Image: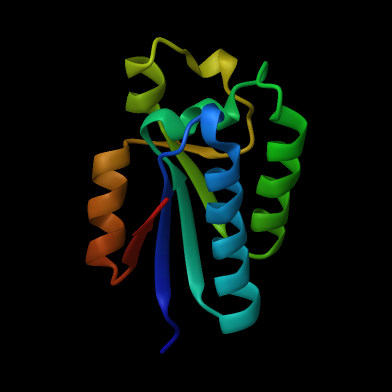
Length: 116
């Protein structure tokens, strides 16, 4: 049975290095260890998906790499609203979910949670 990892990124745009670590961890677990990986941007982590972010192009490429590797990528719609953003401000590169509900489902499916 493959290891199941649910990587949650709560690092906002002020800490792109931590976001890079989260993405690289997810990619490494998938490619090197054959883990089943799911990734979610939660809380301030959703700032990384804003279309007007200075790192938008870089982030879009990293998300594409995760998806190409078989990692499902999502973001919390409640976090987007709570931070005063709206769906139109977010790059259309990840699935919209309710973060708490999504986390509970992943845990019930046997995923171990890793946060950055």
